[in-house]
Image: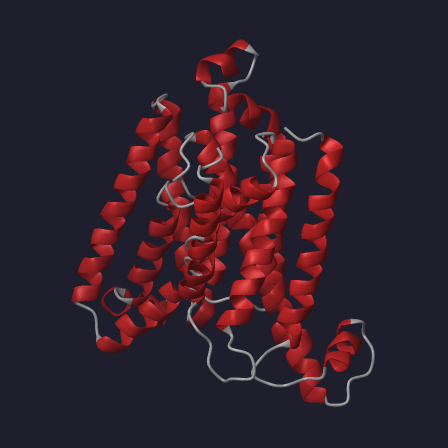
Length: 342
């Protein structure tokens, strides 16, 4: 076990890598912009071309900030779920949050024509965001209702997985009867994207992120005690039911808002806590939480940099890249360490 002072160097390294990844992410893209021009644009200085300033400020910068929020938020959600369920395979979407968002978007896109939603309500990107938010929120209400009645945490986990299976089945039925162009639109949403979020969207997403992180910070003591078992947590005065509800709300707020704005992004929430534990081997959530925030932001920036294929017009699905980049790293670390730290 390392002393708290021993974690200063790993944290400094993570912060340095985060800043480096942030600058590289903004510097690279389909349009080649000199590095000095990028720095000048970020600092509010003069840029040679107006189009370069527009690309830097109105496209690449909000996309990079969205990547940081999405990576950090999903990683924290994964940490909360793995601790709550004491299961290393738990992720932010085990409660059916992602499935609820997918069902909302599926009803909007695939069932929109039949129900008249596409023509009478919001259209375009905001229609997707609202439908995904409503789907996630309804699943959250159901999970919270179940959580107040069922005291067994593992039973809650199984219910979340069953909700995910049920909503996936409904989505499959909708997809079977949908038109080709509607199905294509839904598939592209399911790929996940960080580049379609405006500054207004970044502002709303930031508020949800800050509230979710504050709730997680409030639960730090409870998270540490939960690792020792429900009975021990109760003996030291932890209000188990209240803590469980706060953890679920924090996870749902983080994962639900990110899914609404960027689509379902898998793997980050599951893998980042394990990657961080390999670098900082501690069970203390007061240290793990900020480390996971930094680690998630770094991994998502790296994935987005690769996905946008620098100096090319192509943008690959962020979901595919996150798995391609993260899975080999996790496998290599586990083989090297010969065990899973949890």
